Image (tube, rainbow, N blue to C red; front, side, top):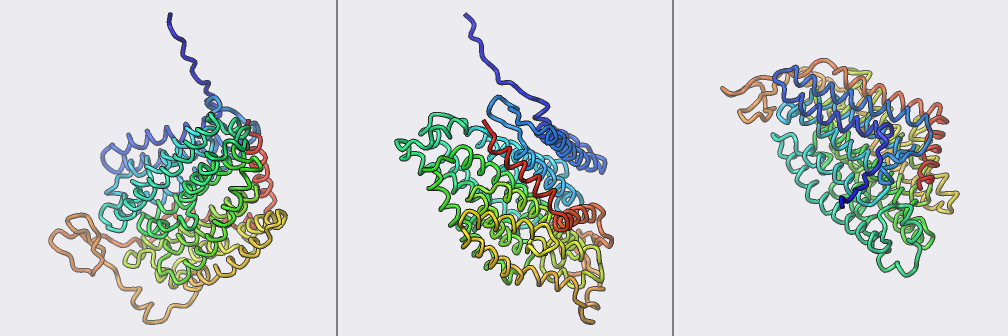
Length: 521
């Protein structure tokens, strides 16, 4: 007698965005092996096309407005997962374009860099769509492992290697913690599927396993979200990783982790007894993150470290909305945070290529309005959006989060968000002032001197001066604004401004995605 193995059903139409990212990963890796500039160009182009197809397919599926089981009950495509896929794919597109002509990508390999970014985005798409515990862990690891490599991809920079190693060690601890939480959850309920877990999680006889499982899950995903006190890795990893990778991971990782955490807590663990456990934990972590992130960002000398501490505070705002079940407010502010952050990193990347001797130091922004008026406007809009000033999408995102907290009788946290936003002006304003202030005569004269960037035999850049050794090759400093950076910054800044001037579409889309999340069966 031959045993019949029942295979899961696949909805390939619903899987189209995920397949596009996975297929693009393979194509980019193969094309990157072709010799010469043609292979590099095709590898980057394949990444751009793959992310474009993923975004386009997600938009088309959104218009259908129906929850679909893409792989049996394990992967569910709904508007909540589609929102995460669009943001993650847009962030991947940004990372690919910023890395295309960045220093270090040549050594790391254009095909490899593009493939790893797509691989991580592929994991993020799976994680955001996961409806069972095994798929959640698979998505988490698929998201994380490529990022470990990407952070260390500039092999001629000690800071990059240190960033990758630190993220690998601490990330592994976070993943192991989350895995133990998932194992306890399965041991308590006997089911892998979140809706099934929801039907038994409130049983008082299971609390001995449920409660520690929930605590471990929050700790594991709190690491990915950069929540205090699990945040220590964030500034160092952001600072050491290549700017393109930092831009990608700062937005996309939070997006996928927030959506899956919302599924876990609100869909699988939303029973009143269990919610009484995790809600105060999230509120406490949110408050600690707002305080530590905003205070830690004060006086930071580099833009990437500043953005690292800023992301900790932003995670606090987002998790505050999650704690009270306000998924619509969470997604609205998440979208505003995403476009604002990508705008800022586009400006940072541009200045790194134009002022390599300063890197991401805030002083590289001096006199930007005179040299690059477009970049100055983009940077200003991005930073104002993160600060939540009026006429930006960030303003209405914070208003939505604060309103949800007040409605849930958590006005104290809404007040803390207001205080944190005021404090944030103390570190968002200095970069803006540097962009627009008039540079003194001495600084102007110094900035006009040509800078020689030389390559040592190991491939490391030598910025000490114009003289080179026998093996040194003088590399010209870029004098024109890279079109891909201008494109990314302009589109992202336009979305920041559009969300501030006309927020209704953003808020409506976030509400639709929130409703879809609670409809998972």
